Every structure is written in C-alpha cells, then in structure tokens.
Picture 1 (cartoon, rainbow, N blue to C red):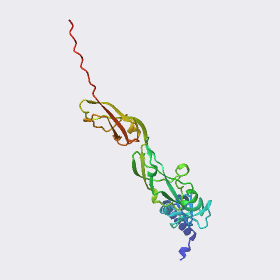
Picture 2 (picture 1 turned 45 degrees about the horizontal axis):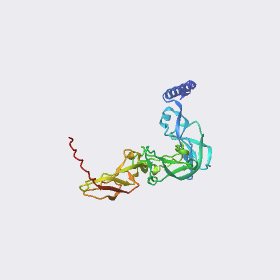
Picture 3 (picture 1 turned 180 degrees about the vertical axis):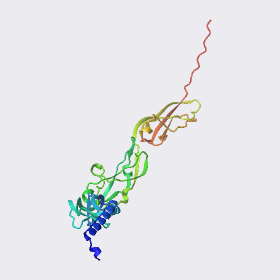
Picture 4 (picture 1 turned 180 degrees about the horizontal axis):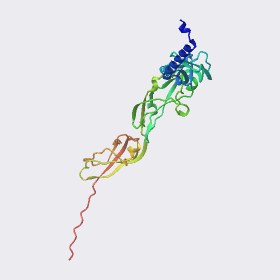
Length: 325
C-alpha cells in the first residue's frame, strides 16, 4: 500500500483536476440557468361569500436549475399560491408563495406581492331592457314587446354588479308587423355603456342561461287621416221617359285612415253602385262605405245617397217654316 502514499499530493491533485474537467464538460452541456416564467396564480381557501376582482391571472417568477430540469419544469410546473383565509374587503396587497413541482428546480423569490380587490359576493337579478331600431314609418305596439326571460341573473363582486344594465337588441331593425327574433343580452354599465366583468374576477362569474333571450316585437305603421270625397255611379236605366237629374250624397266627404303609403294614392272613395232599373221616382238609400283597400278604414260606416229621377221634359216640335211668296 506504500504506492498509494507515495506522492499522494500529486495523485490527489490529479483526481481533483479530473473531477473538475468532468464537471466542466457535463455542465457545458447542461449548465445552470435562470429563467423567468409566467406562473398561474391560485387563490386558495377563498370564502364562498367573497369575490376577488382586478387580480392578475399570472405572475412572473424566476426559477433556477440545470437547463434540462428547468426545461422539464416549464410553465405548467410553476405556480404561485395565495392563502385567502383571512382576507378582508377592500383593495390590498397579499403575499404569493411560488412553488415548483420539479425536483432540483428552485425559485429565486420566496414571496411575491400581488395587488387585489375583495368584496362581498352577490347574486343580482337585472331586468333585460329592449333597445329596438324601428325604420321610418313604423312604431312599436307597447304591449306586444315581450322578452323571455325578463331578467338576467349576475353573480360576482357586489361593487361590480351595482348599476348594471342588460340591454337586448335584435340584429336587424324591426320592419314587419310582427317579428320574433333571438337576441343576446349583454351586461351594461351606467347609461347603457358596456361594463363587462373586470379582469381577474375570482371565482369566475358563472354563465347564465339567460344570456340568450327570445324577443317578440310587434310594430305597425303609424296611422294618418285624409278627407276624401265619395262617388256614386248608379247602374241600369230609369223607366222609359224618365232620367236621373241629380245624385246627392250626405255627407259628401269622409275621413279615411291608414299609413302614409296606403293613403298616398287615395283621392276619392267609390260607393257600391245603386240600381235604378225601371225607376220613375226619386229614391234615397243608406249605402255602406266599404269599398276601401286593405289597411284603410273609414270613420263613417254608411251615408245617405239620393238619386233624383224626373220625367223627361216634353219637347214641342219646331213649326214648319211657311214658304214665302
């Protein structure tokens, strides 16, 4: 064994140099590195009666280890955990503690400050408001606008849910007498401006089934009134030797109502024809005002029509001229 002790200093130096050379070669291929990853944040033990908003979903974390181990760790193996057991309402800074699930990889920080806002968790029923664009010439029928369901249930921080609107609007303007169209309510803030949930709402607001609503709308064209004369054209012929000398209608003018388009071409209304076949005396009849086109109505249901029939005048023959001498 004397050979081991002989020049042992040189032999020890050789071993040290060999180990150093081996380590240098090994770490040249798998060096120690520091990498920053965006780690997801976990909010643990949050009370069911509380809600967090304005919180970041990820946090940059510096991890160190051999390149191979850090590559294996990646983003999915690094996380930041915040204990929410003793949180109080209000804006505050809490401590996040990073964790790494891969051996031989460590974080450079033990504590990471995170700013959040905490409030009571509330369930708020919000009425769905209808916002409908009607083309010119149409107006809504107030009691014929129905939204099903009529409310949107929102869950989240009480401060965020305050003064929330849920307007619903069809994709296209309503331009038919009756229209049923699906519509998607959206959350709204004051004055109807969009007010979605702020980023970082914990827990995430549940998806409400009423985010899709059925909107039933009925619209009509506004009615106008125009005064027009009545016309009567009898049929047939009076008895021989008699003729019609006058036609009187009382009243002569009636008011008709309808949309602007429907009234645009109406200048008069023709009454149903009265037959005068074989008549030799004046007649008066009650005649309905019913010869109106679709969507037009009259405030007068019937009028009196008098047809005056008189005997033809006797015409004396012209005397035969006397020839002159």
